Length: 565
Image (cartoon, rainbow, N blue to C red; front, top):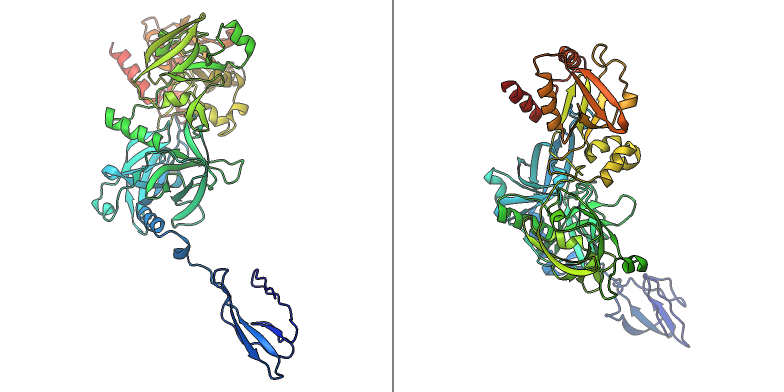
C-alpha cells in the first residue's frame, strides 16, 4: 500500500483480507480507530503495528504523528540571533520637531512639524542617523530600545549631500549598557540578504525586516538631489525606518534612508563606503567638507559618426565634455569637447560607466565621489586627436542654482516694496514639493538645468513679488514682473544679492537724495524706483505686511557698514 501525506491528508488502500486503519479517521470495516500521536515529518516515518480485529481480520494499525511548527529559535541560526540581540540594544528612536523656512515668503517660517526616525550607536559616543530626520530642528530627543525616557540630543556634524547626521547625548545615564556597532568593509553583493532594523510607522516598538540585495547603483538621494552610491534591496523601507542600520551578521553594511513610492518592495540603503567617507572626512579635516564635484556637462560617445568626427581611435572609449562651469577649478585644465577616456587610470566606457566589480558597472562619477575635497585626480583625455594626461585637484562648489538649502534661511531684500530673493531648488519647490519642474515658472526651471556659474560667489537674483504701495510702486504689477531675473541695476551687472544690497546702499546714500534706481530685468524689462519715495515708504510697507526687517540677517550688516562709511 501507499500513503501520501500533504497538509495532514492521508490516503490508504484496502488490501486483501486486511484493513488499513488511519488514526484520527472514521472506522474501516467496522473497526474504530484510537486517537493518534502527532504526524511526523519525512525524516521520521510513522510506526506500523499489526493487530487482530474482533472478527479475526488482520489489521495494520499505523500511528502517525502530526508535525510540530518549528519554534523561532529552532529555525534561526543561534549566532544570528545573538548578533541581532546585540544590534537591537544599539538602535535608538529619534524624535524631532522642526520649523521649516518659507522660501516664497522669505521673512516667514512655516508651521512646526514632528517626525520620527531611527539611528544607531557608533564610536566616540556618536549616534548616526539621516540628516532629513533632523533638518531645521527645533528639538531633538532620542529614546533607547526598551526604555521610556527621551533624552535631549544635539547635532555634532551634518552632511546633507549624503543624508547623514552625527549626534550625541550629553547625559551620561543614556550611555549605560550601550555598545557601538561596527562597520563591514565590503559592499554587499547581489542576492545577499540583509536585515534592516528600525522604528517604522505602524507601531512604537522596534521592527526587524529582511531583504535581498537587488542591485548596487549610483542614484539620486531625494534629500539632497545629489547622485551617490546606494544599494537597492527588496525590503520595504517605510517612514520611521530612516536611519536604522542594515545588518549582515554582526556588522553594519549600510543605513536605510529612502524608498520608492511608485513601486512595491523597493528600498535603498546608504552603503558603508559613503558612511566611512564622511567619518574619514571629519577625522582628516576636523569637519565635514562635502563630496568633490566635477562641474561639467557630458554626453555619451556611442555614435560612430561622432567618434569619427572627433578622431577617436577604435580602441579608445570615453565621454565627450560639452560644457564646464567657469568657476570650477577643472576649467583651468579641461576644455570644451575634450574626450575623457580614463580617471586615475580606470577606463571609461562610451556609455559613461567604469568597472565596479564582476558583472557590475557604475557611472564614472563613482570615481569622483570616492575622493576628498583637495585630492588630486589624473584625467586621460583626447584633445584634437592627441592623448594627454592632466592632473587637477578636486573641489566642491555649490551649483549656480543650489539643489538644497537645508538648515539655511533664505536671503531676501525689499526695496520700494519689491522683494528680491535668490533662485534655488528650495524656492522652486514652493510650487510643488515633488513636481516643481512641471509647476514652477519655465524660465526658472531652465536656469536650474542649463545655467553655468561664472564666479564662486555668483547667484541668480529673482524678483519674487511686489508688495503694492500707492506711492512708491503703483502701476508695477505682479503679473508682469513676478519671477523675472534681475540682470542689472543702473547698468551694473548684479552678481549676487549681497552685491545688489551694496549697490542700493551706495546709491541711496548720496547727498542729492533725488536719484532713481533702474532695475534691468530679463527680456529687456525695466523698473524705475525713486530713492526718496523708497525711503519714505519702507516703514509703512513693512508694517502693512507684518515684516520685521527689510533684509535677511546677513544683509543687514551690509546696510550698517554702508552707513558707517
